[in-house]
Every structure is written in structure tokens, then in C-alpha cells.
Image (cartoon, rainbow, N blue to C red; front, side, top):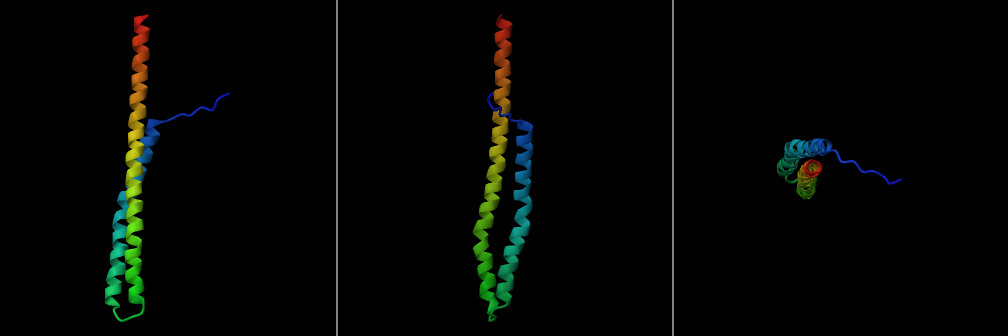
Length: 103
């Protein structure tokens, strides 16, 4: 007996929405945290911790942006996949209907 793979386009669309929301909702808190680290670093000039705070903000900027981009790309890919499955199901159903009507 072969394993069956079932694809639910609605579930893919819902997952796409979750990924998109995560990317959008994380943007402001991430930017706020990076800005706060930079601001605090500037305000603590002369203190030994200042350089570390500045580095914290700059070191995390690229990975956090990459995470946001990955979530955005995942959302788009999931939606593209859902649309393709829906189109394929409709095309297959249409082909079967035409074949049945021709008989």
C-alpha cells in the first residue's frame, strides 16, 4: 500500500498568512530594540559597556532582517503553492468533465 500525500490549499493559505503576520508583527519590535541599543550606546559614551551595546545592535541587524525576509519569502511561497494546487485541481476536474461529456 502506497503512502498518500494530501495537500490542502486552504491550509497552505492559512500558513502563508501566519508567516506574513509574523514578519510584519516582528518588524517594529526588532527595529525598536536595535534603535534602543544604538541610542543607549551613544548615551553611554565613555562607559565600557557602550561599545558592546553598539555592537549588539549592529551584529543583530543582519540576522534579524534575514529572518524577516525568510518569513516573507515563506509566506509568498506557501501562497504560490496553494494557488498552484487549486489551479491544478480545477484543471484536472475540468479535463475529467470534458472527457465524461464526450462519452
